[in-house]
Structure formats: C-alpha cells, structure tokens
Length: 91
Image (tube, rainbow, N blue to C red; front, side, top):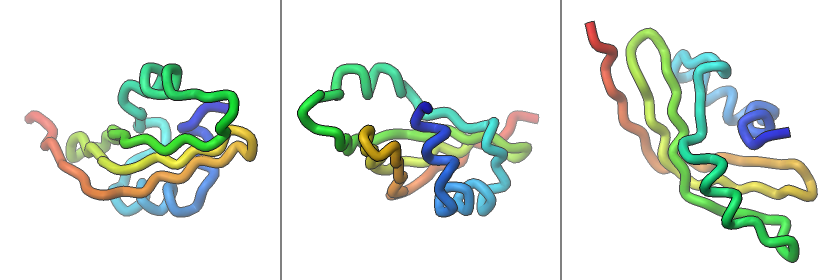
C-alpha cells in the first residue's frame, strides 16, 4: 500500500479534499519516491517529512504544504497541513 492510499483511508484527509472539491484520483505527493527512498531507516518505523501534495479540480491546482507522519509498521499516514496555495486554471 502506498502513502497516498494510506492517507485516503483517513477521514480527515478525505474531508480536506472535499473542502476543496478535489477528487482522490487527482492528488499527487510531489517527489514521493525520492523523499522516502533515502529516509527509510530499518530501525525506525516512523517517518516525519515536509511534503507538498498537489490536488487538481476545475478551478485549478492546489498545493497543500505540511508535514507527513508515516508509520510503516502500523501502515498509518497522517498529513498535517500548514498552508496551501491556489494556481488558477488557465482559460
């Protein structure tokens, strides 16, 4: 199971997407493989990393900035949003 799927299992992250009218299929964790490939430590199951999650809807692109808390042994992921920016759709 990847991190996006784990986030979508949580009600809080789904509520965030609903607030911005973004469908789950339209989100992407920017640089996910690069961020987490080098940070994994077999002695520590918990990862805490600053991330940007991009979401798209008809109004444009939303970049959500925050901290991702990920526990690989319990298969849990939580996104703690600190802010966002909106890039309007081009007409």
